[in-house]
Amino acid sequence: MIEELDDRWLIRLRGVPVVAATQTSDGRGLTVTFGSGAVLTTSGPTLLTDGPATAPGAVALPTQEVVSLIGSTVLSAVAFKFGSLRMVFSTGHHLNVRSTGSEATARLRHDGVFEWSCREGVGTMRVLRSEHL
Image 1: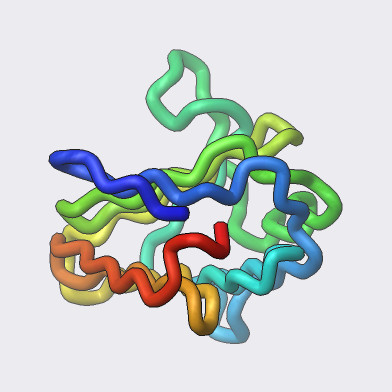
Image 2: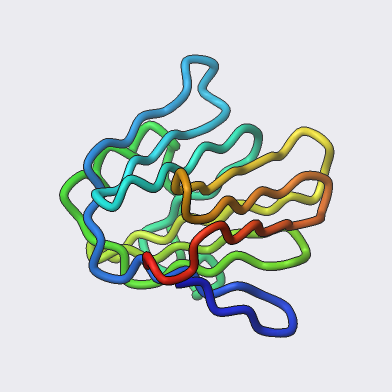
């Protein structure tokens, strides 16, 4: 289920495992596949950190480290209406996408259930079947 708040959508992926994770061939994006069937694809700036990105001493990791998410589970997934996405994993990693420029895009979709996307600072959500999550 997707819960809509004033400025964000809470995406019910808590406890869902990461089954595949790769950096795109151009090195500028990621593809993360979840056990529920949801898939996240990004292009442009994607920040993967060990711990919260805003915490003092947060360590930004190279995007190729996304493979370390395989086998972890989602603790939190929040998509913002201003075009950002924040995901937290059981490994302590945080994945942040900020759609502040025309080169940054992201899409988190689960076929037949929902699709969230962001481009140029705007997030959009289509809920196709809310009772599934």
